[in-house]
Length: 180
Image 1 (tube, rainbow, N blue to C red):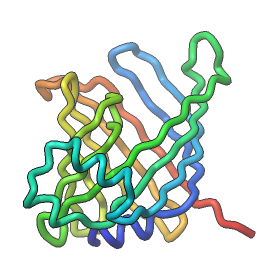
Image 2 (image 1 turned 120 degrees about the vertical axis):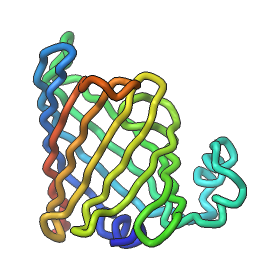
Image 3 (image 1 turned 135 degrees about the vertical axis):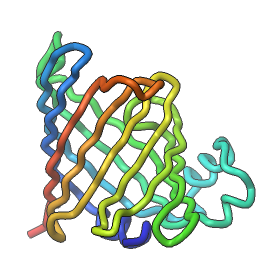
Image 4 (image 1 turned 45 degrees about the vertical axis):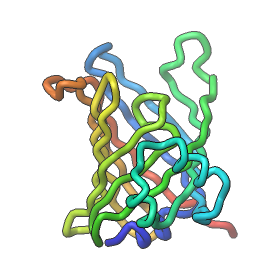
């Protein structure tokens, strides 16, 4: 699989059910989300702004491939004050290809920490997308794979910044919303 194929296959509206286990707090969390993934043009103002503010080198910017926007609205059972509280957000993601099966992702907002992030991605032989992001306080390792055209799975492991301890794990199954 290539990043272009992955973004094309991921585009659309998804219903996600994620289970997370926080080892640090010994808590289990259930999250229901609506996720929208939309392909963007390389000329999109948000893409240009992200590239200008990122650590990407000028030569890297020549390898932009399939930028996209991801929006989410999530409801968690782990909100202590109000279990029905909804968290939402969005981020722009710009892939920079190194070769057919690997590269770098520049993200306006990271997965584990709410700051911009640069991640390394690659595809395994079976098409599984792997992503590793080094944050200031942690390291996030994610995997996304398609079970079928309209079902995908996602798993993540959040480690300490030294990589020696596991802070959190999660698994999500996601089903594409199909318009009738």
